[in-house]
Amino acid sequence: MIAYLSIIPLCVYLVLLFFPKLRFPAILARIYVILFIIVFSIISAANLNLYREWGSKINYRALDMAFNSTQEAIASSSSSPIFLSVIIMLTLIFTGYIISRKLIRYSFPDYSVSILKKAGISIISLALCFLMLRGGWQLSPINQSMAYFSTESILNHAAVNTEWNLMQDILNNKYGNDNPYKYYSRKEAKEILKELFGKKEDSTVNVLKTFRPNIVLIILESFTAELVGSLGGEKGVSPNLDQLSRDGILFENIYAAAGRTDKGVTATLSAFPSQAIRSIMKQNSKQEKLPGIAQDLAQNSYQTSFYYGGESEFFNMKSYILSHGYQKMTDQHSFRPKDMNSKWGAYDDKVFSKNLNDMDQAKSPFFSTILTLTNHEPFELPGKAKFEGSNVENKFRSTSFYTDSCLGAYIREARQKNWYKNTLFIVIADHSHRLPANLTEFDPKRYRIPMLFFGDVLKPEFKGVRISKYGNQTDLASTLLSQLNISDKRYPWSKNLLNPKTPGFGFFNWDNGFGFATEEQIISFDNVGKNIILRRNNADLKIDAELTRKGKAYMQEVFQQYLDF
Image (cartoon, rainbow, N blue to C red; front, side):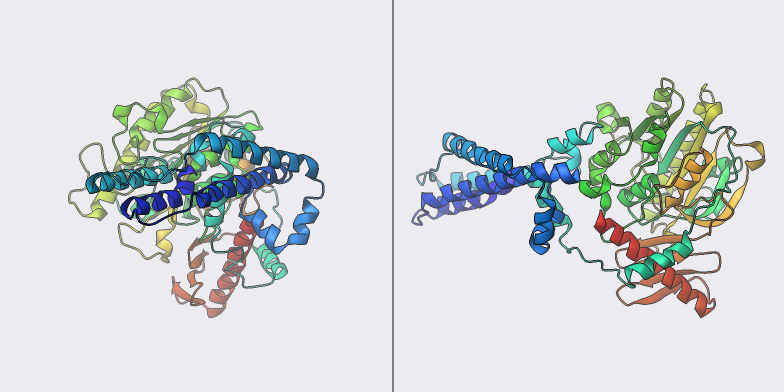
């Protein structure tokens, strides 16, 4: 935030350094400082009241409400302690002004230095300012997650700079607060969704031996069904997953919410579909209102943990994880420097090994999530590639094979552990990939992913079962919680795939369109052109129209709910 405030003064300083004949009134510099002291003091005072009401820091939604719904904003703040707020604001302004007079020198450049020194000063100061703007040398620019440190939301919120957070939220909402996917009235869209989800009837087929198994959820980076032989994909790339499928429950027609990790993680762990042009994970005021599987399990005596070998701050993931019931988080900071050999962090084998060792000390029942990262561009490997050649397709196949081999080694070692017998392993992907066939963003194959339930905790009669019902990664929440006899009412976008009465369908989207998949037909719809741009087969046009109708209502309500958070 300091860097953003310093940009204008720095530019003025450098201009005066090279053009000494120009004059800049010092009073303008003082006004600049005082202006921001006043603005920031007002924001800070307003933030205290807003947080009390909303549980989130001042954001774009608050400003939008203040300017566009002024009466509602005044009504909402009527219970706020106005006098105390004014006292706090005036105190901040006064102390800020006094401190600024002590710390800030309103002096001008030394014009006598040589042109080389002037150039050096300019380059170094601009570079340092840019580095401060970015927040450091790390892989991702600074975000809220870098300030998060606790499982207590209020402590994390207090750690985030209020003004920087507001600026980020405004930028994240630069497209305004309108729903770009509005096809129907709100009432009509909800009626259509009732056809899809309806009332959840409790007729679950119980496939587990116990209601309280340990659970290890493994989310595989970019693991496409196109490279899983047991799902009809290429042979020889995922032999371990194929082998596990023979002894587990394989869901054959599962679609990822979208094509990015942040969207896939929230869809998997919170059962909230992708918002296409937005990412709810990046906005703390919204993502913290989502439910979370780990939250429900923690409330039912589960010990919860999350493992990732890279920067947990990436995509604001850290704040999301710590806000959703995970009591322990392991990321790149938990690994030795020599293990951080890939661009993204620690290779998958290191992450699997750490989880395996840590689970020996975990109290049962536990719920542990592993998010892999090696199968990601630029597709680096710690050893020799399985598939020869420098082309990106074979690199992708090789990293997929490597991740699969890590999964196989993990399960083999886990079988030697005491906790294995009472553990359910769930394997799913965060999203699919355009490779190896270079699929378009609207091709349904780009979103099809594996989902597998595996372990000795499965009843014998369900080992080797294949579920052909169409579904989403959002369906994991309801499917899993129903097996544990835990309510899934907090997950309206999730359906129980092990309940024979639930309808089968899959939904996915990208920035300018969505796809809808059923046993009868799969379509992809372009939101810009307002037409179907891909069909799996030449089915009855009535079927195409019906899937389009349902897909429109689904997309509209997802985005509207996101806006309403």
